[in-house]
Length: 221
Image 1: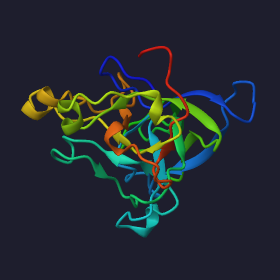
Image 2: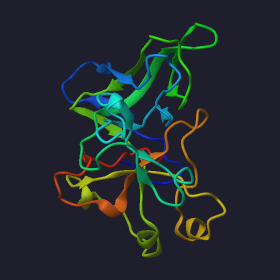
Image 3: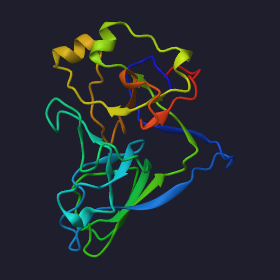
Image 4: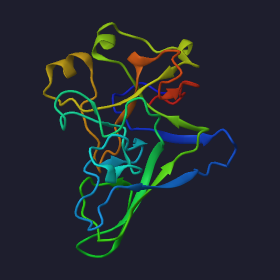
């Protein structure tokens, strides 16, 4: 993990602990698209986003497809909220890219993000490429909660070996709480990419948390 400039960038792959020479292990998964292509996964997914299977979508048609782990504010107001997935479910992996056939042009598009709600050609799938290597090592920025920031929490090597949840940026620049506590101000975008970070306030020995901390990045980012 790394801390320094407040600019979360999602999860960046560093290596695999199974010795694959630096090549990412990518699995293919589906992002939801209806048979006519007019209804698709409404939430955008950016490179570096952790993703989960849809387990509580409100429509059984989406079961078995992937969605971002969380949806950041201000899309859902001021609070980070889960997106059509059970909070307790482990994430599948980290989104790298996707491919789909555009509804208007009929061209195959390969992209490092999924533009939520994009129409696709009828009868064609949206394929997501996900780093699902269970032994992958990722670099991610660490961030504290408002309360922890006020307490001037310091992240030390004593936290190596512990576990933590991931969260996502999203409170706007105009939020007084955000300015006071140093909260991450942006949502993901096709310009900035993912804004997921390691939630420093959740660090604990609890094995059910999202990730394990195995080191401190020597390059402060």
